[in-house]
Image (cartoon, rainbow over the protein chains, first blue to last red):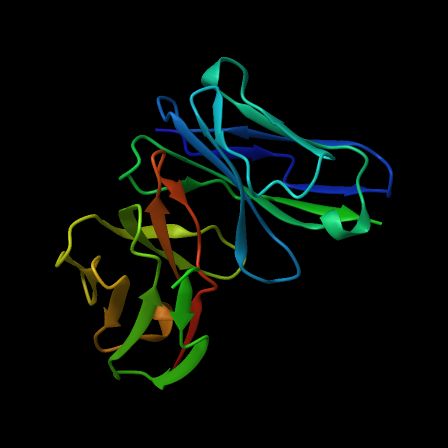
Length: 113
Length: 112
């Protein structure tokens, strides 16, 4: 089966610009998570979808971040406008059940200059 | 315990030594406990998912135990090899929708 894919792998944008990250989970996986790693620190939870519904978005840092998962398939994470502190690696992961292991994408490295 | 805590933060062991790490997590609203192995420049890979108190899982030289009542899990590596060098992450799933949150990890370096 195809794994979790993320696009782009790397994005460099200027402060104030908009960037949209995309995640395609493994087909049939209802659970989709977004995480980010900033400055080499731990992986921080951003939000959790079950199918198309946001179950928990308590980790979203502020209203400049918007995540969607239309139709319960792929998901997008938009940052608008981007700030310097948004730089980091954004990971997407999916799973079939709550007790199933997460399958991670390769991440999107975002650099805001 | 209010957050996920892992110890030690890092350690260096000689090839052939056995080692273990600790993960402490909130025991309330517990659903499952995940362990992941994360190599530099790669994505985390799942090792185990455990759900029951007293669970023990094994994969080759790596094993894990779970105590849900007191909120801790141990990961053991027997006869460490250089290829075991990585960061080991624990991640409890909790709440009605099994939100998975990660600890800060234990960075293991195995010296040949």
